[in-house]
Figure (cartoon, rainbow, N blue to C red):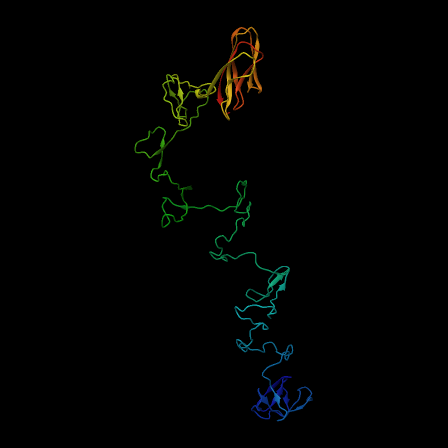
Length: 416
């Protein structure tokens, strides 16, 4: 039962006067807490349940309320005016819902549960923009926006290395592409831009600073200087001879002729030139791996040698009487093959024989040549070179003993 206490009368919570009124306007009593003296107290409904109150039976208004002493709904909405609860009135502690900043947490700490409205699909629940509304959740997870507003991420928000390699997936709709993947129409990408500059110049403060690429008329400015940083590349017409004042590198652009086969030669088409020589015996030899001129006869016909240069020619002679396989040209070493282009065989005996050319003493027969008796020589110029295995001797093997079968072989060596 609630009471309103006046100077001369006491009323219950419904505004009904309580018979007897206030005995004294001042508080009396020596115990802790204020004390008020009444003649009697009755409820304000039926005037019954009267309790006599006098000096020996005083009504005490307690300064604190025991746990559970306030019934549910005892305080009406708005009963506590703004600021009526002083800062610190609710003590902080483990059993209080109030916690101090930086205080350690512990098991069984009291607190106010934060709740949200379960919504399978999030939507506005308040009347208009700016109103308060409940947080919404589904399947135990809080609904949050998957999109960021413009300028929501501040400059520098992502630290160096915070986006791991591969975090941005590659694909047609992504600006990231994988090496060696095929391009297709509609592929996404990041546009490469440059600063338009009629005349290129430094835009950064000092050497080593970053600055944008520069371009003009749709073309990127590039450096025409050579590696020395001083001399430039000059482009001159094909008919213009280089001068001493020209840069170190002069590029002469010659138009490619469009003269078809068997038409009269004309124009400035590219041609292969050779140096004419009356003979090669007077040519100065160059070192191995040096660049060399092509040579032709004085009639302009290019000088060529069949099969191999002179340095790679090989030959050998063997006289055989016992009819056994005999090496004519020795092995040329690891990885080096022998090719035979000519064979000359003489048989001074009265017995006709055949001679096998073998890939080693007991190897494969590569060719068999008939040699009549009492003949001064059989000459065989092969239409194509006859090849033998690398690092293997070329052997001649007469079909029987005969005195004497003389075999001469000529060819060249090659790694191929």
